[in-house]
Length: 265
Image 1 (cartoon, rainbow, N blue to C red):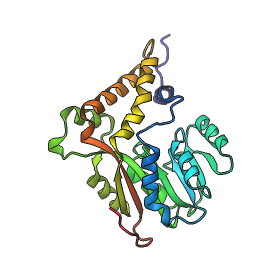
Image 2: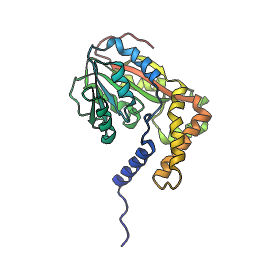
Image 3: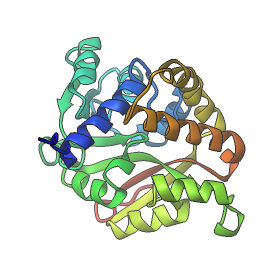
Image 4: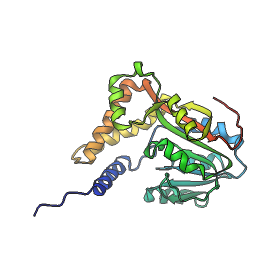
């Protein structure tokens, strides 16, 4: 009897486990820094109430959740992710103020009109910008805001290196430039109040521990982990060669019908 072929669900679970292995023990799961978070938070701080309720969607290892808890001592942070092990450790780090919520950020198990701010750092790609913004709208209070970051082109089509186009077309076909993302935001019924490009140093800080992790895991790696390592090596090498052609951009947005908001673009 031939062994049964693995199901699509099994394959997906194995791939997820491979990514979890790669990022195990790493605090940064995407480009980001305290300095960038502080600057972006400064764009919305004045609009937040004294005791804001904030959801960190796709919280991952909790770098953003911890930052928000430190920067806003009166805030309650809901760290939303499917990785329950990571979330458990995150909640234990600041019990009562950082609350782990095991759930899908495309359908978060949160009450309607319960949030003053949705923060989503380097994770919106997992469900898509339109899907995420539609899901989060019902969660926002009347003056609620959304902050998210995403990878975007910095060069016009004619100036994009072919190697970069080939890689991102394969790994993130929904990638746009900042104007394209803005158009999607407006099509979803939101208005943009601010935009900020993260510096290249945020990528360097993200990739530095990853380079070592790739070297540590390479010996003896088998599929699907071997494939995950190869793809990440390609991504790191691409940044070294062509990182100036793309970057991470933060958007501050709000439902367009809610109220006027000072435009700080």
